[in-house]
Picture 1 (tube, rainbow, N blue to C red):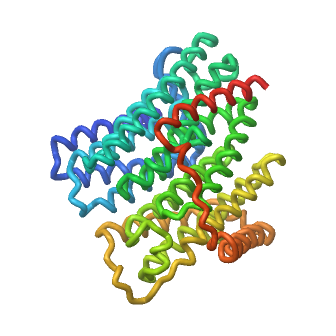
Picture 2: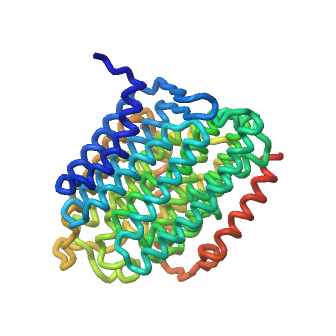
Picture 3: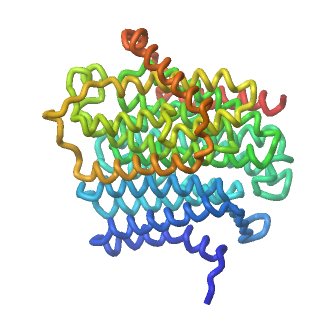
Length: 482
């Protein structure tokens, strides 16, 4: 009996949820089951990256579920698979129980569901499941701080998705369908509500300033998951909208540029390693939105490198960059940190180079200056890591037992995916990022290293997050009417 691609896709999307609950019944094989699901998703994502012909599924009528699996989905699914695989390897000998692996796999499956959904209600349901699973993982350590950070995340996420749901209802009222395509005929207020929900959930611009505390205060593997995959559940529908509805493309690109500049502006002055990475997550999400046509490839490279950076940062002796300058790290650790920092800065021979070249080739003229400034800021930010001291022999040699398998997997991914866009290697394309990186390093050594500017954290405070949503909603009402 032959199973068609549509049936295989349905089995694949349901399998993580089923296995997640089976883990409770078979806790002795929790890690093996979780690893198997990640590997299956890895194969599924690779297949659709190399076979991008779209597969569409209409499971019910206009009230129901619409799925679309194509090359864009493949890149995002592949990102989710590799990052989840790395996190499982990292936690393999950590003593985490069946509950952790259950929530990880349910989260993995829910994120995948967003990446293949093509209707507003399916996205809403999947994101709500993501919110619950993420909260449980953030609060897994059961400390007062982790529970507070998790509840803060859950409150902001649920509030944002209420706006999204209101927008989805308005789309249905106008088009009698929840399909993504209905956005084109929807009233401006519907687009504004939907965008507010997704921008907030995706950590975009000022409505996403809940992200730095959530990512930086979570456990190391959770930070890697959040930055590598979870945050992209809010970004993916925006990319899909931009590709499906030409009128929405400029709005998505505008938020992409603004987000890239906002995130890198904070990252340049941050002195805490995990906060640097968290703010840079915001910035890199802006790069994904700035050029939607190649957003899938950029999402893959960002997921790999940022997950690696969070895992590395979690194994450094301090989060304070000033303290790290006084404590040479082992050369082996420094090499992993340097490779990841080179990639995200756009250095040739690593995936970040091709991603940045592709993005620059797909920018509108009005975006170029802003994105070049963001690229320069990226080089300045990661010079903080590259110029940290290292020594052949160090007392800081001990790392978590699963560190090396996870980080080597992610860094190998950066090297391998570099071959996805080998056409990028022309003299012009190679010289530009090298000049940008050199300028960024020079600016760091001569100027930014000596600055002690501390940006206010007021916008990140819980009491101001809803106010930021209101501000963005006002901007969206103006933008979508223009």
